[in-house]
Length: 127
Image: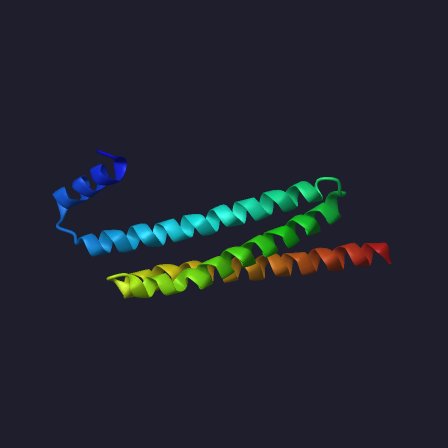
């Protein structure tokens, strides 16, 4: 018996749950884990490229890398969003993905604002 079967058995002991709901949650979790893996891969590559830079430039480089990685993650989720329509509980899936998309959008805006402020700081010191 694998871990998934064990967890399903434990869940069913407490409350009857439909297989469709479990599969919806599992497929959504798999998609989100794939997006997270994609983010980590992209950010790790970029952070290595930024390692030779000085403090402010390095911070700006890392912020650009985070923005790019978050955008890639968001596009991955958006391109796979149609998988929600194939699940039994479409609304739950949509809510989960919409909240993740909103969180990514907020993070991208935050990093973009931070990058702009660092650019202003750097360029005002140069003048």
